[in-house]
Length: 126
Image (cartoon, rainbow, N blue to C red):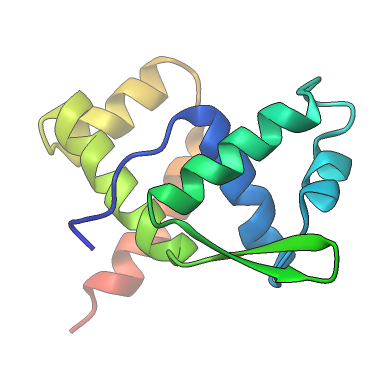
């Protein structure tokens, strides 16, 4: 998992669509999912897909006239690594610092803290 590289936001957005699909998808499928959110040209999406293939995030296979893209990197593996990296970079590995920043910035409230308390109590049980 340490060899997983961090993705630029645009490529991560494409990967999130592919992970959510749960099956190989075409560039047309991705364009359809991006409709209304991004105004990327088809060539832009194809460039992102090509980069993701080159970086080892996707595999591509031709079926008839269409290329189908499937993930080679598991979504949970990527999110775990990215979350750990974010915590290290932005909060010097301090979960307390992260939670305090979110709370002080009004990004989480008491309900969120209670949910976090319950989760910590669940995973901390012997």
